[in-house]
Image: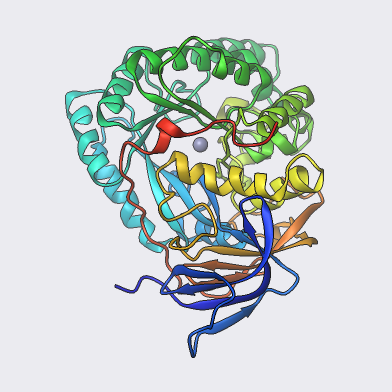
Length: 469
Ligand SMILES: [Zn+2]
């Protein structure tokens, strides 16, 4: 079965491990079949990559393109991804209270037929009824092997679970050989702080930030890690936002299970000062962006490998929806920011260009690690023979446009407009097809595939210290 196109990428510097190697790349029927010097088959399209770096397609392990009320759906969110050099993302199928878990996963898979990039799914589980625990087995068989629970209800549409439910679901995940994830913040402390702030007249986005100090994240992470360990479930912490949270994640308690942590580009690029801006509501997300000191500690975590991945947590809302309650009650501002489209340029500008990371480190953090952690590394994660022909032809010396008009995401504001971002995906190739050029989609017909995963991924031999100290 042919699953992709054929193309020769000629004259680029191809990332191989930590090295950039002068080489051509041959993709046949969507699969990389030659790297180096080779005789190209007759009639295959040739893409000139002279002067460009050839990177593996980026993998964003954390997006929301089906969340009710959010701006982007699979169609627009995946176009934003591809335009920014992300050729694979992992979306969350959400079980709202009372819904059947397997129905939800099927619905999300069906929506994914509109995706321009390849996608996998995590499942968000909101109860531990016998029916749901049983359905989790069928969901794993359907290729969805990671399960996220919310420890908070405040912003999640009532998805929060209590600790008993969380523990029971983690036990079931352990039984299935899957990966547990949790949104780690202490719901009750947030509620208490928020009520007090509102009573004191702090109603704007500054209150959102003040109600969610690092403590609420660190406490919940420590609790969740203990529960995951007791349940015997490998555990992944999405969107880790604070230095205290990082400390809590990696406290050595003699635990038996792997604990893996992700941070987000917005935590590495911005500080809590944004919440004092007139448009502070546009930056409201949970957990919120923390202090400059937290940012320093998160970069240290990225550089020494304690943080393994960067996920965008892409979940933008239209400006009107963001602004509606911006000056009356911060608890009613929808939570989420755009990010999938700017993931690569943010990490390149602030990571590689600033000297914190090598280009090899960037590809590990934004492609190889998520591929390995989430069981996609037989197909994705590096420019290697036999892997999918997903490439980014990258010009490090060109500016990446951050104005809303430059971006493909379906929103009318940008959170990086004040930041100078560098690094242009001159061409994004997915399964052997050039789908985007210079931030514009050039192949509207291209569709990605659902990537079924198998449990018992390479977590056991996953080396958390993936970046040189
Ligand atoms: Zn999220």
